Length: 87
Image (cartoon, rainbow, N blue to C red; front, side):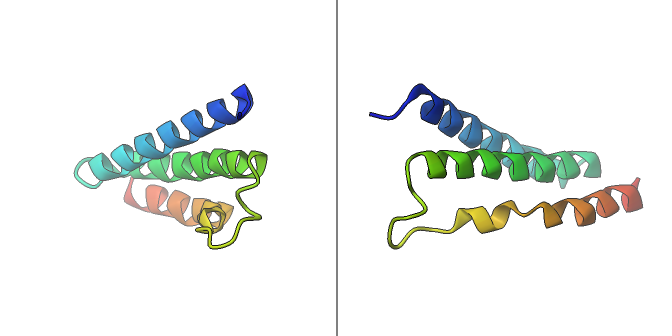
């Protein structure tokens, strides 16, 4: 049985991921600030999902999707530049 910490990490990561997707989809129609916030929130959500994956030893299994590659903090400077350029 998984611990309460693992369950909370999974719930927070998945909720953050869905919230970031909704912010980015709405941001294409209205404002670029929501796109920037969506990118920042998606990086944080992927970090939470990465912590969940480490707590259940997901990374050591065969044939897994390497989602932790998408959680790069290198997405933040171009997103910030995009936000400053359009505002």
